[in-house]
Amino acid sequence: MSDPVTTITARLGPVVSGIAAEIAGEDQGDVDPVVRPSDRADAQINGALALAKRLGADPRDLARRIVESGALDEIATELEVAGPGFVNVTFDPRFLERELASVAADPGLGLDRVDEPLTVVVDYSAPNVAKEMHVGHLRSTAIGDSLVRMLEARGHRVKRENHIGDWGTPFGMLIEHLVDLGETEAADSLSLGDLNGFYKQARGKFDASEEFRERSRQRVVALQGGDGETLRLWRLLVALSAAYFRTVYDRMGVLLTDDDLVGESHYQPLMPGVVERLDAAGLLVESDGADVVFPPGFENRDGDPLPLIVQKGTGGFNYATSDLACLIERTEDIGADLVLYVVDAGQSQHFQMVFAVAEMAGWLDDSTEAVHVPFGIVLGPDRKRLKTRSGEPVRLVALLDEAVERAESAVLERNPDLEPAARSAVATAIGIGAVKYADLSTDRVKDYVFDFDRMLAFEGDTGPYLQYAHARICSIFRRAGVDRATVRTAPITLTERSELALARLVLAHPTAVEAALDTFSPHKLCTWLHELATAFSAFYEHCPILGSDEAVRTSRLALADLTARVLERSLAMLGIAAPERM
Image (cartoon, rainbow, N blue to C red):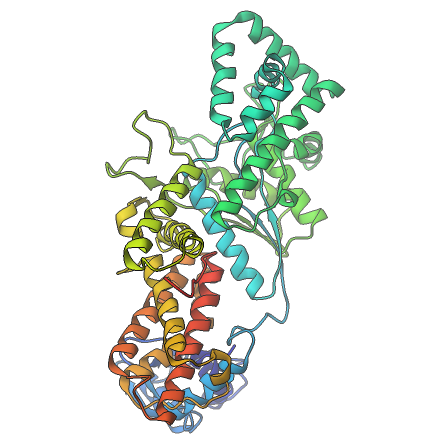
Protein backbone atom coordinates (compact mmCIF):
# COMPACT_ATOMS: atom_id res chain seq x y z
CA MET A 1 0.00 0.00 0.00
CA SER A 2 1.11 3.54 -0.72
CA ASP A 3 0.15 5.66 2.24
CA PRO A 4 2.33 7.53 4.73
CA VAL A 5 1.51 5.29 7.69
CA THR A 6 2.53 2.16 5.77
CA THR A 7 5.70 3.84 4.51
CA ILE A 8 6.76 4.92 8.00
CA THR A 9 5.98 1.45 9.38
CA ALA A 10 8.13 -0.16 6.69
CA ARG A 11 11.00 2.24 7.37
CA LEU A 12 10.85 1.97 11.15
CA GLY A 13 10.16 -1.75 11.55
CA PRO A 14 13.81 -2.86 11.15
CA VAL A 15 15.05 0.16 13.13
CA VAL A 16 12.85 -0.50 16.14
CA SER A 17 13.60 -4.23 15.98
CA GLY A 18 17.32 -3.42 16.01
CA ILE A 19 16.97 -1.11 19.00
CA ALA A 20 15.01 -3.80 20.85
CA ALA A 21 17.68 -6.42 20.11
CA GLU A 22 20.44 -4.06 21.27
CA ILE A 23 18.71 -3.36 24.59
CA ALA A 24 17.74 -6.96 25.24
CA GLY A 25 21.03 -8.43 24.06
CA GLU A 26 19.21 -10.83 21.75
CA ASP A 27 16.94 -10.83 18.72
CA GLN A 28 13.37 -9.79 19.61
CA GLY A 29 11.89 -10.62 16.24
CA ASP A 30 9.93 -8.11 14.17
CA VAL A 31 8.67 -5.24 16.32
CA ASP A 32 5.72 -3.12 15.19
CA PRO A 33 6.50 0.60 15.58
CA VAL A 34 2.70 1.21 15.87
CA VAL A 35 2.23 4.18 13.56
CA ARG A 36 -1.21 5.78 13.64
CA PRO A 37 -2.88 8.92 12.26
CA SER A 38 -3.02 11.66 14.88
CA ASP A 39 -4.96 14.84 15.58
CA ARG A 40 -1.83 16.33 17.18
CA ALA A 41 0.43 15.87 14.16
CA ASP A 42 0.41 14.23 10.74
CA ALA A 43 1.10 10.86 12.37
CA GLN A 44 2.16 9.43 15.70
CA ILE A 45 4.57 6.60 16.54
CA ASN A 46 3.37 4.78 19.66
CA GLY A 47 5.44 1.61 19.68
CA ALA A 48 8.03 2.80 22.21
CA LEU A 49 5.58 2.51 25.12
CA ALA A 50 4.72 -1.18 24.74
CA LEU A 51 8.29 -2.08 23.78
CA ALA A 52 9.75 -0.25 26.80
CA LYS A 53 7.36 -2.06 29.12
CA ARG A 54 8.39 -5.39 27.64
CA LEU A 55 12.12 -4.64 27.91
CA GLY A 56 12.03 -2.72 31.19
CA ALA A 57 13.39 0.38 29.47
CA ASP A 58 12.56 4.10 29.54
CA PRO A 59 9.94 4.75 26.82
CA ARG A 60 11.09 8.35 26.23
CA ASP A 61 14.64 7.11 25.77
CA LEU A 62 13.40 4.56 23.22
CA ALA A 63 11.42 7.29 21.45
CA ARG A 64 14.54 9.50 21.28
CA ARG A 65 16.54 6.64 19.78
CA ILE A 66 13.86 6.18 17.12
CA VAL A 67 14.06 9.89 16.28
CA GLU A 68 17.86 9.88 16.21
CA SER A 69 18.04 6.80 13.97
CA GLY A 70 17.63 8.99 10.89
CA ALA A 71 15.19 6.53 9.33
CA LEU A 72 12.63 9.25 8.77
CA ASP A 73 14.93 12.01 7.54
CA GLU A 74 13.43 11.96 4.05
CA ILE A 75 9.88 11.65 5.35
CA ALA A 76 9.52 14.17 8.16
CA THR A 77 10.45 17.79 8.70
CA GLU A 78 9.79 17.50 12.41
CA LEU A 79 9.90 14.62 14.92
CA GLU A 80 8.82 15.46 18.46
CA VAL A 81 9.03 13.17 21.48
CA ALA A 82 5.87 13.88 23.47
CA GLY A 83 4.16 12.65 26.61
CA PRO A 84 5.36 9.33 28.05
CA GLY A 85 7.07 8.29 24.80
CA PHE A 86 5.04 9.16 21.72
CA VAL A 87 6.73 10.51 18.62
CA ASN A 88 4.74 13.14 16.72
CA VAL A 89 5.57 13.23 13.00
CA THR A 90 5.18 16.20 10.66
CA PHE A 91 5.53 15.10 7.03
CA ASP A 92 7.93 16.73 4.62
CA PRO A 93 5.86 18.19 1.72
CA ARG A 94 8.38 16.68 -0.75
CA PHE A 95 7.66 13.23 0.73
CA LEU A 96 3.92 13.77 0.27
CA GLU A 97 4.49 14.92 -3.31
CA ARG A 98 6.40 11.73 -4.09
CA GLU A 99 3.66 9.63 -2.52
CA LEU A 100 0.98 11.44 -4.54
CA ALA A 101 2.91 10.81 -7.76
CA SER A 102 3.10 7.11 -6.90
CA VAL A 103 -0.64 6.92 -6.17
CA ALA A 104 -1.57 8.86 -9.32
CA ALA A 105 0.35 6.35 -11.46
CA ASP A 106 -1.12 3.32 -9.69
CA PRO A 107 -4.32 1.76 -11.15
CA GLY A 108 -5.27 0.81 -7.58
CA LEU A 109 -4.72 4.38 -6.34
CA GLY A 110 -2.42 3.12 -3.61
CA LEU A 111 -4.63 0.25 -2.48
CA ASP A 112 -2.62 -2.91 -3.11
CA ARG A 113 -4.08 -6.37 -3.60
CA VAL A 114 -3.17 -8.77 -0.80
CA ASP A 115 -0.32 -11.22 -1.34
CA GLU A 116 -2.29 -14.15 0.07
CA PRO A 117 -5.98 -13.75 -0.83
CA LEU A 118 -8.60 -15.44 1.31
CA THR A 119 -11.68 -17.29 0.15
CA VAL A 120 -14.47 -15.32 1.79
CA VAL A 121 -18.17 -16.17 1.84
CA VAL A 122 -20.46 -13.23 2.56
CA ASP A 123 -24.03 -14.14 3.55
CA TYR A 124 -26.33 -11.13 3.18
CA SER A 125 -29.76 -9.75 2.22
CA ALA A 126 -31.79 -13.01 2.68
CA PRO A 127 -35.38 -12.12 1.72
CA ASN A 128 -38.22 -14.63 1.80
CA VAL A 129 -39.92 -16.13 -1.23
CA ALA A 130 -43.45 -14.79 -1.86
CA LYS A 131 -42.81 -11.86 0.49
CA GLU A 132 -41.79 -8.37 -0.48
CA MET A 133 -38.46 -6.97 0.58
CA HIS A 134 -38.98 -4.28 3.20
CA VAL A 135 -36.89 -1.71 5.05
CA GLY A 136 -35.61 -4.49 7.33
CA HIS A 137 -33.63 -5.84 4.37
CA LEU A 138 -31.93 -2.51 3.68
CA ARG A 139 -29.12 -2.77 6.21
CA SER A 140 -28.04 -6.35 5.49
CA THR A 141 -28.10 -5.69 1.74
CA ALA A 142 -26.21 -2.37 1.87
CA ILE A 143 -23.63 -3.44 4.47
CA GLY A 144 -23.02 -6.86 2.94
CA ASP A 145 -22.64 -5.45 -0.57
CA SER A 146 -20.15 -2.83 0.64
CA LEU A 147 -18.05 -5.45 2.42
CA VAL A 148 -18.03 -7.59 -0.73
CA ARG A 149 -16.80 -4.64 -2.79
CA MET A 150 -14.03 -3.75 -0.32
CA LEU A 151 -12.88 -7.35 0.00
CA GLU A 152 -12.76 -7.72 -3.79
CA ALA A 153 -10.84 -4.45 -4.08
CA ARG A 154 -8.17 -5.99 -1.83
CA GLY A 155 -8.00 -9.04 -4.08
CA HIS A 156 -9.79 -11.62 -1.96
CA ARG A 157 -11.82 -14.41 -3.58
CA VAL A 158 -15.36 -13.49 -2.56
CA LYS A 159 -18.41 -15.71 -2.88
CA ARG A 160 -21.71 -13.90 -2.37
CA GLU A 161 -24.53 -15.98 -0.90
CA ASN A 162 -28.14 -14.86 -0.61
CA HIS A 163 -29.70 -17.33 1.84
CA ILE A 164 -33.34 -16.86 0.87
CA GLY A 165 -36.27 -18.37 2.75
CA ASP A 166 -37.73 -20.76 0.17
CA TRP A 167 -38.83 -23.74 2.28
CA GLY A 168 -41.14 -24.55 5.16
CA THR A 169 -44.78 -25.03 6.10
CA PRO A 170 -46.07 -21.70 4.64
CA PHE A 171 -45.36 -23.03 1.16
CA GLY A 172 -48.30 -25.43 1.49
CA MET A 173 -50.79 -22.55 1.63
CA LEU A 174 -48.86 -20.50 -0.96
CA ILE A 175 -48.88 -23.32 -3.52
CA GLU A 176 -52.58 -24.04 -2.89
CA HIS A 177 -53.39 -20.34 -3.36
CA LEU A 178 -51.42 -20.40 -6.61
CA VAL A 179 -53.47 -23.41 -7.74
CA ASP A 180 -56.73 -21.63 -6.84
CA LEU A 181 -55.77 -18.49 -8.75
CA GLY A 182 -54.37 -20.32 -11.72
CA GLU A 183 -50.76 -20.10 -12.75
CA THR A 184 -51.28 -17.26 -15.24
CA GLU A 185 -53.11 -14.96 -12.82
CA ALA A 186 -50.70 -15.79 -9.99
CA ALA A 187 -47.74 -15.10 -12.23
CA ASP A 188 -49.25 -11.76 -13.31
CA SER A 189 -49.81 -10.77 -9.67
CA LEU A 190 -46.32 -11.74 -8.55
CA SER A 191 -44.59 -10.26 -11.59
CA LEU A 192 -46.14 -6.89 -10.68
CA GLY A 193 -44.35 -7.08 -7.35
CA ASP A 194 -47.50 -7.67 -5.29
CA LEU A 195 -45.91 -10.39 -3.19
CA ASN A 196 -47.41 -9.09 0.03
CA GLY A 197 -50.91 -9.16 -1.47
CA PHE A 198 -50.40 -12.73 -2.66
CA TYR A 199 -49.13 -13.84 0.75
CA LYS A 200 -51.93 -12.08 2.66
CA GLN A 201 -54.60 -13.64 0.44
CA ALA A 202 -53.15 -17.09 1.09
CA ARG A 203 -52.93 -16.43 4.84
CA GLY A 204 -56.49 -15.12 4.92
CA LYS A 205 -57.83 -18.28 3.26
CA PHE A 206 -55.71 -20.44 5.58
CA ASP A 207 -57.14 -18.72 8.67
CA ALA A 208 -60.74 -18.78 7.40
CA SER A 209 -61.16 -22.20 5.79
CA GLU A 210 -60.59 -25.61 7.34
CA GLU A 211 -60.78 -27.15 3.87
CA PHE A 212 -57.97 -24.85 2.63
CA ARG A 213 -55.92 -25.58 5.75
CA GLU A 214 -56.18 -29.31 5.14
CA ARG A 215 -55.21 -28.91 1.48
CA SER A 216 -52.24 -26.79 2.58
CA ARG A 217 -51.10 -29.43 5.07
CA GLN A 218 -51.31 -32.14 2.45
CA ARG A 219 -49.39 -29.95 0.04
CA VAL A 220 -46.57 -29.55 2.60
CA VAL A 221 -46.38 -33.33 2.89
CA ALA A 222 -46.25 -33.61 -0.91
CA LEU A 223 -43.55 -30.94 -1.11
CA GLN A 224 -41.38 -32.59 1.51
CA GLY A 225 -41.99 -35.96 -0.11
CA GLY A 226 -40.69 -34.75 -3.47
CA ASP A 227 -43.96 -34.87 -5.44
CA GLY A 228 -43.14 -33.77 -8.97
CA GLU A 229 -46.12 -31.49 -9.63
CA THR A 230 -45.81 -29.84 -6.22
CA LEU A 231 -42.10 -29.21 -6.80
CA ARG A 232 -42.90 -27.67 -10.21
CA LEU A 233 -45.37 -25.24 -8.61
CA TRP A 234 -42.89 -24.48 -5.82
CA ARG A 235 -40.16 -23.72 -8.36
CA LEU A 236 -42.56 -21.36 -10.14
CA LEU A 237 -43.10 -19.44 -6.90
CA VAL A 238 -39.36 -19.27 -6.28
CA ALA A 239 -38.65 -18.11 -9.85
CA LEU A 240 -41.29 -15.36 -9.72
CA SER A 241 -39.96 -14.17 -6.38
CA ALA A 242 -36.37 -14.24 -7.63
CA ALA A 243 -37.40 -12.05 -10.58
CA TYR A 244 -38.86 -9.55 -8.11
CA PHE A 245 -35.71 -9.64 -5.95
CA ARG A 246 -33.69 -8.95 -9.08
CA THR A 247 -35.65 -5.76 -9.82
CA VAL A 248 -35.04 -4.51 -6.28
CA TYR A 249 -31.32 -5.30 -6.43
CA ASP A 250 -31.02 -3.60 -9.82
CA ARG A 251 -32.82 -0.56 -8.46
CA MET A 252 -30.59 -0.48 -5.42
CA GLY A 253 -27.42 -1.08 -7.41
CA VAL A 254 -26.09 -4.11 -5.54
CA LEU A 255 -24.02 -6.98 -6.89
CA LEU A 256 -26.35 -9.87 -6.02
CA THR A 257 -27.65 -11.95 -8.93
CA ASP A 258 -29.69 -15.12 -9.35
CA ASP A 259 -26.42 -17.08 -9.29
CA ASP A 260 -25.95 -16.01 -5.66
CA LEU A 261 -29.29 -17.45 -4.48
CA VAL A 262 -28.82 -20.34 -2.06
CA GLY A 263 -32.20 -21.12 -0.56
CA GLU A 264 -33.15 -22.88 2.63
CA SER A 265 -34.27 -25.75 0.41
CA HIS A 266 -30.65 -26.36 -0.62
CA TYR A 267 -29.77 -27.40 2.93
CA GLN A 268 -32.75 -29.66 3.58
CA PRO A 269 -31.05 -32.85 2.31
CA LEU A 270 -27.95 -32.04 4.37
CA MET A 271 -29.65 -31.69 7.74
CA PRO A 272 -29.93 -35.40 8.66
CA GLY A 273 -26.18 -35.65 8.14
CA VAL A 274 -25.65 -32.79 10.61
CA VAL A 275 -27.52 -34.69 13.30
CA GLU A 276 -25.68 -37.93 12.50
CA ARG A 277 -22.27 -36.26 12.71
CA LEU A 278 -23.09 -34.53 16.00
CA ASP A 279 -24.27 -37.86 17.38
CA ALA A 280 -21.13 -39.64 16.16
CA ALA A 281 -19.03 -36.95 17.86
CA GLY A 282 -20.81 -37.64 21.16
CA LEU A 283 -22.22 -34.13 21.33
CA LEU A 284 -25.92 -34.89 20.93
CA VAL A 285 -28.09 -34.99 24.04
CA GLU A 286 -31.83 -35.64 24.39
CA SER A 287 -33.64 -32.86 26.23
CA ASP A 288 -37.45 -32.66 26.54
CA GLY A 289 -37.74 -35.04 23.60
CA ALA A 290 -35.50 -32.99 21.30
CA ASP A 291 -31.94 -33.64 20.15
CA VAL A 292 -29.76 -30.79 21.37
CA VAL A 293 -26.17 -29.74 21.98
CA PHE A 294 -25.13 -27.82 25.09
CA PRO A 295 -22.29 -25.46 24.11
CA PRO A 296 -20.41 -24.30 27.23
CA GLY A 297 -20.95 -20.80 28.53
CA PHE A 298 -24.59 -20.32 27.52
CA GLU A 299 -27.34 -20.12 30.12
CA ASN A 300 -31.01 -19.20 30.20
CA ARG A 301 -32.51 -16.60 32.53
CA ASP A 302 -32.68 -19.13 35.36
CA GLY A 303 -29.00 -19.92 35.07
CA ASP A 304 -29.58 -23.35 33.52
CA PRO A 305 -27.48 -24.51 30.55
CA LEU A 306 -28.97 -23.31 27.27
CA PRO A 307 -29.28 -25.90 24.52
CA LEU A 308 -29.00 -25.47 20.77
CA ILE A 309 -31.87 -27.54 19.36
CA VAL A 310 -30.88 -29.36 16.18
CA GLN A 311 -33.86 -31.72 15.83
CA LYS A 312 -37.27 -31.23 17.38
CA GLY A 313 -39.12 -33.98 19.16
CA THR A 314 -41.41 -34.23 16.13
CA GLY A 315 -38.39 -35.04 13.97
CA GLY A 316 -38.31 -31.64 12.25
CA PHE A 317 -35.27 -29.46 11.84
CA ASN A 318 -34.88 -25.73 12.51
CA TYR A 319 -32.71 -22.73 11.73
CA ALA A 320 -29.83 -23.99 13.86
CA THR A 321 -29.68 -27.24 11.88
CA SER A 322 -29.80 -25.31 8.62
CA ASP A 323 -27.05 -22.91 9.71
CA LEU A 324 -24.83 -25.80 10.80
CA ALA A 325 -25.37 -27.54 7.45
CA CYS A 326 -24.60 -24.24 5.75
CA LEU A 327 -21.39 -23.79 7.74
CA ILE A 328 -20.24 -27.33 6.94
CA GLU A 329 -20.73 -26.73 3.21
CA ARG A 330 -18.94 -23.39 3.32
CA THR A 331 -15.92 -24.77 5.16
CA GLU A 332 -15.63 -28.28 3.71
CA ASP A 333 -16.93 -27.85 0.15
CA ILE A 334 -16.27 -24.19 -0.68
CA GLY A 335 -13.09 -24.09 1.40
CA ALA A 336 -13.82 -20.73 2.98
CA ASP A 337 -11.14 -19.10 5.10
CA LEU A 338 -13.63 -16.52 6.35
CA VAL A 339 -17.44 -16.58 6.52
CA LEU A 340 -19.33 -13.36 7.22
CA TYR A 341 -22.98 -13.42 8.31
CA VAL A 342 -24.46 -9.95 7.81
CA VAL A 343 -27.54 -10.46 9.96
CA ASP A 344 -29.33 -8.22 12.48
CA ALA A 345 -28.08 -7.97 16.05
CA GLY A 346 -31.12 -9.84 17.36
CA GLN A 347 -29.53 -13.07 16.11
CA SER A 348 -26.25 -12.60 17.99
CA GLN A 349 -26.73 -15.33 20.56
CA HIS A 350 -28.00 -17.73 17.92
CA PHE A 351 -24.81 -17.33 15.87
CA GLN A 352 -22.59 -17.49 18.93
CA MET A 353 -24.14 -20.85 19.79
CA VAL A 354 -24.00 -22.15 16.21
CA PHE A 355 -20.30 -21.22 15.95
CA ALA A 356 -19.59 -22.77 19.37
CA VAL A 357 -21.22 -26.06 18.35
CA ALA A 358 -19.36 -26.02 15.02
CA GLU A 359 -16.08 -25.62 16.92
CA MET A 360 -17.00 -28.47 19.27
CA ALA A 361 -17.69 -30.68 16.24
CA GLY A 362 -14.45 -29.66 14.52
CA TRP A 363 -16.18 -27.94 11.59
CA LEU A 364 -14.63 -24.62 12.58
CA ASP A 365 -10.95 -24.54 13.49
CA ASP A 366 -7.97 -22.22 13.24
CA SER A 367 -8.08 -22.41 9.44
CA THR A 368 -11.55 -20.88 9.15
CA GLU A 369 -13.13 -17.94 10.92
CA ALA A 370 -16.88 -17.39 11.10
CA VAL A 371 -17.99 -13.88 12.01
CA HIS A 372 -21.44 -12.53 12.73
CA VAL A 373 -21.60 -8.93 11.43
CA PRO A 374 -24.56 -7.57 13.43
CA PHE A 375 -26.40 -4.34 12.81
CA GLY A 376 -29.08 -2.20 14.45
CA ILE A 377 -32.54 -1.36 13.15
CA VAL A 378 -33.96 1.46 11.03
CA LEU A 379 -36.22 3.72 13.08
CA GLY A 380 -39.03 6.08 12.20
CA PRO A 381 -39.46 9.62 13.59
CA ASP A 382 -41.05 8.08 16.72
CA ARG A 383 -37.79 6.14 17.29
CA LYS A 384 -39.62 2.85 16.79
CA ARG A 385 -39.17 0.46 13.88
CA LEU A 386 -39.92 2.29 10.64
CA LYS A 387 -43.43 1.30 9.50
CA THR A 388 -46.26 2.60 7.37
CA ARG A 389 -49.24 4.32 8.96
CA SER A 390 -51.10 1.01 8.85
CA GLY A 391 -48.31 -0.59 10.90
CA GLU A 392 -46.76 -2.57 8.04
CA PRO A 393 -43.01 -2.59 7.35
CA VAL A 394 -42.13 -0.06 4.64
CA ARG A 395 -41.59 -1.72 1.25
CA LEU A 396 -37.95 -1.31 0.25
CA VAL A 397 -38.74 -0.51 -3.38
CA ALA A 398 -41.24 2.19 -2.30
CA LEU A 399 -38.61 3.72 -0.05
CA LEU A 400 -36.05 3.76 -2.88
CA ASP A 401 -38.56 5.20 -5.34
CA GLU A 402 -39.45 8.04 -2.98
CA ALA A 403 -35.77 8.84 -2.45
CA VAL A 404 -35.27 9.10 -6.23
CA GLU A 405 -38.40 11.24 -6.68
CA ARG A 406 -37.25 13.66 -3.97
CA ALA A 407 -33.76 13.74 -5.47
CA GLU A 408 -35.16 14.58 -8.91
CA SER A 409 -37.05 17.55 -7.46
CA ALA A 410 -33.85 18.77 -5.83
CA VAL A 411 -31.84 18.36 -9.05
CA LEU A 412 -34.49 20.20 -11.07
CA GLU A 413 -34.33 23.09 -8.63
CA ARG A 414 -30.52 23.24 -8.59
CA ASN A 415 -29.90 22.60 -12.28
CA PRO A 416 -33.05 23.31 -14.34
CA ASP A 417 -31.11 23.21 -17.63
CA LEU A 418 -30.18 19.54 -17.24
CA GLU A 419 -31.83 17.41 -19.93
CA PRO A 420 -34.63 15.09 -18.66
CA ALA A 421 -32.71 11.86 -19.34
CA ALA A 422 -29.59 13.17 -17.62
CA ARG A 423 -31.67 14.55 -14.75
CA SER A 424 -33.32 11.16 -14.25
CA ALA A 425 -29.96 9.37 -14.17
CA VAL A 426 -28.48 11.90 -11.72
CA ALA A 427 -31.60 11.69 -9.52
CA THR A 428 -31.29 7.92 -9.36
CA ALA A 429 -27.62 8.16 -8.39
CA ILE A 430 -28.35 10.76 -5.72
CA GLY A 431 -31.49 9.15 -4.30
CA ILE A 432 -30.12 5.62 -4.06
CA GLY A 433 -26.74 6.93 -2.93
CA ALA A 434 -28.36 9.02 -0.20
CA VAL A 435 -30.22 6.02 1.23
CA LYS A 436 -27.13 3.81 1.13
CA TYR A 437 -24.81 6.42 2.60
CA ALA A 438 -27.20 7.24 5.45
CA ASP A 439 -27.19 3.55 6.32
CA LEU A 440 -23.50 2.85 5.82
CA SER A 441 -22.25 6.00 7.53
CA THR A 442 -23.96 4.93 10.75
CA ASP A 443 -21.93 2.64 12.98
CA ARG A 444 -23.61 -0.61 11.99
CA VAL A 445 -24.24 -1.77 15.55
CA LYS A 446 -26.36 1.31 16.23
CA ASP A 447 -29.98 2.03 15.32
CA TYR A 448 -30.65 5.15 13.27
CA VAL A 449 -33.64 7.33 12.38
CA PHE A 450 -34.57 7.31 8.70
CA ASP A 451 -34.94 10.93 7.58
CA PHE A 452 -35.28 11.81 3.88
CA ASP A 453 -34.63 15.52 4.44
CA ARG A 454 -31.36 14.92 6.26
CA MET A 455 -30.00 12.17 3.99
CA LEU A 456 -30.81 14.08 0.76
CA ALA A 457 -29.21 17.33 1.93
CA PHE A 458 -26.30 18.65 -0.13
CA GLU A 459 -24.51 19.78 3.03
CA GLY A 460 -23.22 17.78 5.97
CA ASP A 461 -22.26 14.15 6.26
CA THR A 462 -24.47 12.89 3.41
CA GLY A 463 -24.14 11.00 0.17
CA PRO A 464 -25.11 14.01 -1.98
CA TYR A 465 -22.38 16.11 -0.34
CA LEU A 466 -19.73 13.56 -1.37
CA GLN A 467 -21.21 13.18 -4.85
CA TYR A 468 -21.27 16.96 -5.25
CA ALA A 469 -17.56 17.15 -4.37
CA HIS A 470 -16.86 14.77 -7.25
CA ALA A 471 -19.18 16.60 -9.64
CA ARG A 472 -17.61 19.94 -8.69
CA ILE A 473 -14.16 18.66 -9.66
CA CYS A 474 -15.51 17.43 -12.99
CA SER A 475 -17.06 20.86 -13.60
CA ILE A 476 -13.70 22.56 -12.96
CA PHE A 477 -12.16 20.57 -15.82
CA ARG A 478 -15.12 21.31 -18.10
CA ARG A 479 -14.78 25.04 -17.43
CA ALA A 480 -11.04 24.84 -18.01
CA GLY A 481 -11.49 22.86 -21.23
CA VAL A 482 -8.89 20.37 -19.96
CA ASP A 483 -9.00 16.59 -20.37
CA ARG A 484 -8.43 15.12 -16.91
CA ALA A 485 -6.15 12.40 -18.27
CA THR A 486 -3.66 15.02 -19.47
CA VAL A 487 -2.75 16.16 -15.94
CA ARG A 488 -2.26 12.75 -14.37
CA THR A 489 1.48 12.69 -14.89
CA ALA A 490 1.94 16.34 -13.96
CA PRO A 491 4.00 16.98 -10.80
CA ILE A 492 2.03 18.12 -7.76
CA THR A 493 3.63 20.83 -5.64
CA LEU A 494 2.32 21.38 -2.11
CA THR A 495 2.83 24.78 -0.51
CA GLU A 496 -0.44 25.87 1.05
CA ARG A 497 -1.85 24.43 4.25
CA SER A 498 -5.10 23.30 2.61
CA GLU A 499 -3.12 21.58 -0.18
CA LEU A 500 -1.15 19.64 2.42
CA ALA A 501 -4.30 18.73 4.35
CA LEU A 502 -5.99 17.43 1.19
CA ALA A 503 -2.89 15.48 0.17
CA ARG A 504 -2.70 13.72 3.54
CA LEU A 505 -6.33 12.61 3.25
CA VAL A 506 -5.95 11.43 -0.35
CA LEU A 507 -3.01 9.30 0.78
CA ALA A 508 -5.01 7.91 3.72
CA HIS A 509 -7.31 6.03 1.34
CA PRO A 510 -5.71 2.56 1.88
CA THR A 511 -5.67 3.05 5.65
CA ALA A 512 -9.37 3.94 5.62
CA VAL A 513 -10.27 0.83 3.63
CA GLU A 514 -8.24 -1.39 5.93
CA ALA A 515 -9.80 0.21 9.02
CA ALA A 516 -13.26 -0.55 7.62
CA LEU A 517 -12.34 -4.16 6.83
CA ASP A 518 -10.59 -4.77 10.15
CA THR A 519 -13.93 -4.58 11.96
CA PHE A 520 -16.25 -5.02 8.97
CA SER A 521 -17.52 -1.49 9.57
CA PRO A 522 -18.20 0.54 6.40
CA HIS A 523 -18.87 3.66 8.48
CA LYS A 524 -15.11 4.04 8.96
CA LEU A 525 -14.66 4.43 5.22
CA CYS A 526 -17.57 6.90 5.21
CA THR A 527 -15.98 8.99 7.97
CA TRP A 528 -12.76 9.34 5.98
CA LEU A 529 -14.70 10.08 2.77
CA HIS A 530 -16.52 12.96 4.45
CA GLU A 531 -13.21 14.31 5.75
CA LEU A 532 -11.77 14.06 2.22
CA ALA A 533 -14.72 15.93 0.66
CA THR A 534 -14.52 18.58 3.38
CA ALA A 535 -10.78 18.98 2.80
CA PHE A 536 -11.37 19.42 -0.92
CA SER A 537 -13.96 22.11 -0.20
CA ALA A 538 -11.41 23.99 1.92
CA PHE A 539 -8.76 23.53 -0.79
CA TYR A 540 -11.16 24.84 -3.45
CA GLU A 541 -11.99 27.87 -1.30
CA HIS A 542 -8.45 28.83 -0.35
CA CYS A 543 -6.40 27.74 -3.37
CA PRO A 544 -7.47 29.31 -6.68
CA ILE A 545 -7.11 26.81 -9.50
CA LEU A 546 -8.08 28.28 -12.85
CA GLY A 547 -6.89 31.79 -12.00
CA SER A 548 -3.36 30.73 -11.01
CA ASP A 549 -0.21 30.79 -13.16
CA GLU A 550 0.25 27.75 -15.38
CA ALA A 551 2.55 25.70 -13.10
CA VAL A 552 0.36 26.18 -10.04
CA ARG A 553 -2.80 25.66 -12.11
CA THR A 554 -1.53 22.36 -13.52
CA SER A 555 -0.40 21.17 -10.08
CA ARG A 556 -3.77 21.95 -8.51
CA LEU A 557 -5.67 20.41 -11.40
CA ALA A 558 -3.61 17.24 -10.91
CA LEU A 559 -4.40 17.20 -7.19
CA ALA A 560 -8.09 17.81 -7.91
CA ASP A 561 -8.18 14.98 -10.47
CA LEU A 562 -6.51 12.57 -8.07
CA THR A 563 -9.02 13.56 -5.38
CA ALA A 564 -11.89 12.87 -7.79
CA ARG A 565 -10.48 9.47 -8.73
CA VAL A 566 -10.11 8.47 -5.09
CA LEU A 567 -13.60 9.78 -4.29
CA GLU A 568 -15.13 7.85 -7.18
CA ARG A 569 -13.37 4.61 -6.33
CA SER A 570 -14.19 4.84 -2.63
CA LEU A 571 -17.85 5.66 -3.29
CA ALA A 572 -17.94 2.62 -5.59
CA MET A 573 -16.81 0.49 -2.63
CA LEU A 574 -19.99 1.65 -0.90
CA GLY A 575 -22.03 0.85 -4.00
CA ILE A 576 -22.64 4.57 -4.64
CA ALA A 577 -22.33 6.23 -8.04
CA ALA A 578 -20.28 9.40 -8.56
CA PRO A 579 -22.09 11.61 -11.11
CA GLU A 580 -20.06 14.06 -13.17
CA ARG A 581 -22.90 16.58 -13.19
CA MET A 582 -25.38 17.54 -10.51
